[in-house]
Image (cartoon, rainbow, N blue to C red; front, side, top):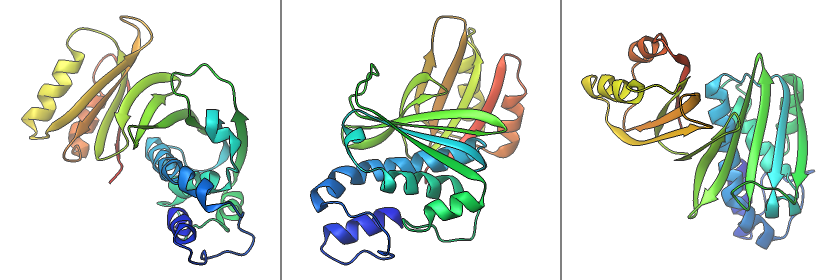
Length: 234
């Protein structure tokens, strides 16, 4: 709904739910549209990682994105996190109210100067039992997840993914790939992010199909695996 409202404005149509909505020039909205889509994907991703939409949610805009009003971005994050756990249809106007009623406290931060490897980046940090942070950027015109829990990764925010945090040891990546192959789950991409050899690493496997829950549970029980999650951007 948030992105649809922006498209309405760009096509010179009156925005739905326009009462109390922020007014931005169409050119600014056009520049922000990819990040609004990214923000919703990041929110949905966090929801699948285990964030329940209660407690503090911190949205940080880095670089050029910090020059703009972030109401659309914030609404998209809220919709992503809460979209699958509430029957309320979330839009630009009611997003903040829905979040408040669910016990979510959203904090907005803007950082014009930063040392991240991406000139313009969005980070969402959430705490609901566990602390999670996800960073995203637009890479070659497409939405990408570029960090999880402050660990740099690099994968498209699309399709199905399997994620693990594990001790970086020989054989773990290959063993996971073998198990997926035996279950006829095709791997579309693989990325491993780590701070140093043989420390904790994050592995992201893109798959053409969703990973069966029984297989995910088996993999999660392996020695050296700290946690395992499956998520879908479909």
